[in-house]
Image 1 (tube, one colour):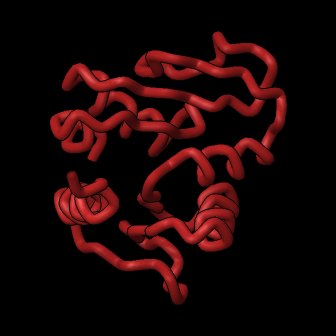
Image 2 (cartoon, one colour; image 1 turned 60 degrees about the vertical axis):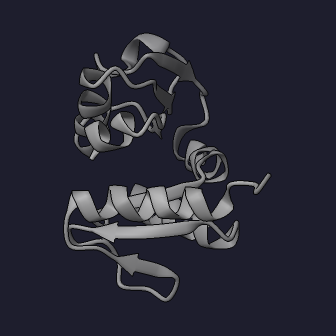
Length: 133
């Protein structure tokens, strides 16, 4: 997923730690993409190795609000508590959310079957939001 987003010239913003965050950052980074990690702690060195710009927020889980507010669209993978909080913030801020791999089945979340579908739908949302000249 991260690779597909980077190949479209998009940046990836995430929590900057392990698991899905690391996998998405790895894919984006390997394709030359910009990866931004909003870390929960005070030490930027805690970021995974694939984060280009680590930002130590010291906000713990509250950083999820900044991630949701900063993103044009959210891709939710699974249903951990952190992901659920990002979904809630995303819904509150009126963001488009794409659910993948067991993401919560809630009104306002468009379920997608594959990472390619998530990337394609994200690109379509960005094209819809692009100003017309």
